[in-house]
Image 1 (tube, helix red, strand yellow):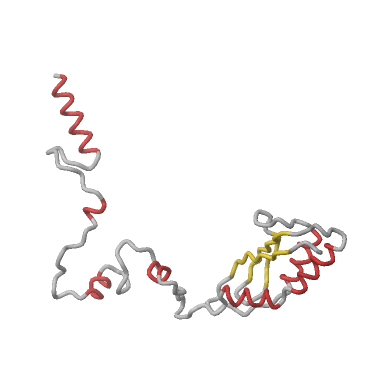
Image 2: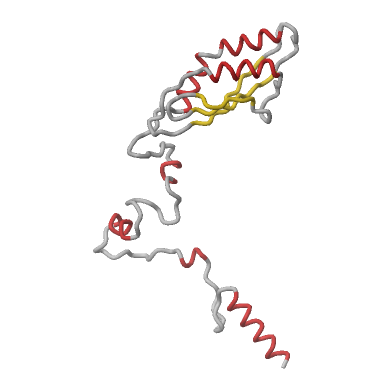
Length: 181
């Protein structure tokens, strides 16, 4: 009786884990996702992808845009590549860093030991206007409100090129300040 119960429990356990009552081993996802060794000769890879509802060349199990991301290419939306890149944004901020430096210099006259990194988080709308700017408290070591408020005002006044894909951009831009000597 105990032996029959043990066999029944083992069979139910195997069945619940994806096996069958005949003692076959459960298949893993890798076993079930293995493509056939020789695809039919009359079906081209692009035709199979189209039949599966996927663009030609897209790997099974890959997320949308994975191949482009792995190749370092910008994903294209609406047939356009984004022209407002992080490099473009960084260059505009670098070209306008002197007013932020002036903010820090003014405060360092009273606090000469004030130094460190100040990270400004800002959002650029699709038209190139800064819609939000604030001190990133988690990433900043300089948390002087006079410096950060002044820097936020400078960043908020910058104009960036419009997004070619009508997208917003979020940026965390660091400023590294040394002690006054």
